[in-house]
Length: 121
View 1 (cartoon, rainbow, N blue to C red):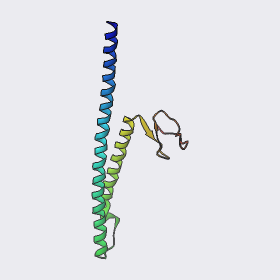
View 2: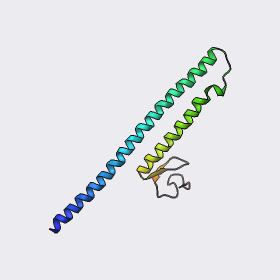
View 3: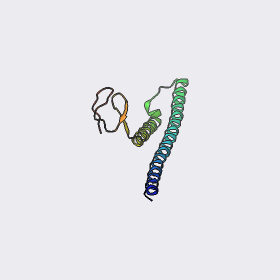
View 4: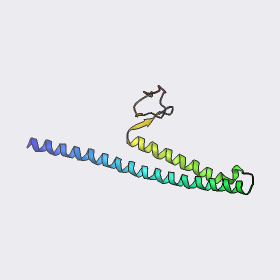
């Protein structure tokens, strides 16, 4: 009976670990899809900005930053959303990036093993 109890316990533990890993992978995949959508939106905004600049150039009009300010603000917002999603992905992997050299490392490090920068937690 002891053998079957141990086997059952081990199977239960294995299932739990597998379920946790599967959940993390699914969340990571969803975040990566969100990032791809954000990047696509950024590309659309770049096209709009380029078109506006060229239209001003073709009409020999002076370009003002205000002419593209809405698009620039949207790009800033999207960039922030991408950063948040990337941080969530890193968290799912129990990792962080060095703010100096972008080296990917375990969350428990206090200093970057690549450049020596103190890690801000």
